[in-house]
Image 1 (cartoon, rainbow, N blue to C red):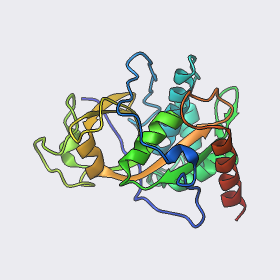
Image 2: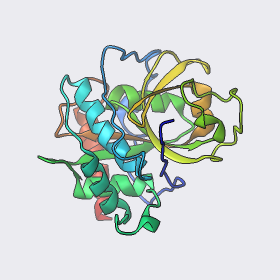
Image 3: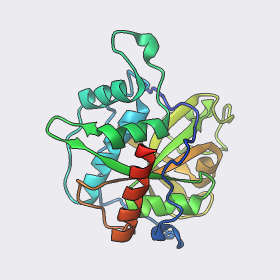
Image 4: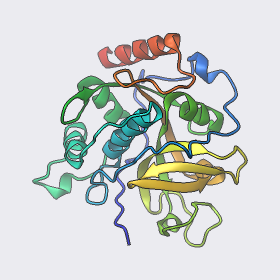
Length: 253
């Protein structure tokens, strides 16, 4: 059985945090399907089998997914994910008691301010949030910004391996009964409640239904990396500028 750690603490909001609601890309209907079977996002575990560093692993895998959409790949090492986890949450390898996971908005703010360091470069994202109950907004983030950075409340029923996450599977379906987890929403086959969503987590692709997403989601964020070739999507020049301005205002408030 694969070891899977969690590490996303309960969702919080910060005064003035960047929002996606004012972007032009958010004022439309999302695509009916987002099929990416021909693209390998190449997600990695990034030490999330040893540490509760899913918030860091999620960012590392977002970098890789963004690069894959542009036709290349970026190397992200376990060491990179662990070091970012240390710097963004206060985790210390010398003290296992400090392995307490991360708050997504604080982790994102740290990445914007200090960057996500790799062996040969440091990448700086901009980001913004959209209401977790707005599934059309979530799909627009997936289509326009490569993947959605989610915080979810996993149930004990979700511990079963090899199947589709759904709210009808056996076991305790109480959201949060297993714990909080950060993962990426990557692609979807349709928008019906039973349609399949493809999630990137623990070095692989996990399938889930939209009704499962609706049940488990506690926060949703879009991330963009100007240093990487932008994924073809809905994020245009004006939206880039507006999002950068919102991030700058948040960091200097």
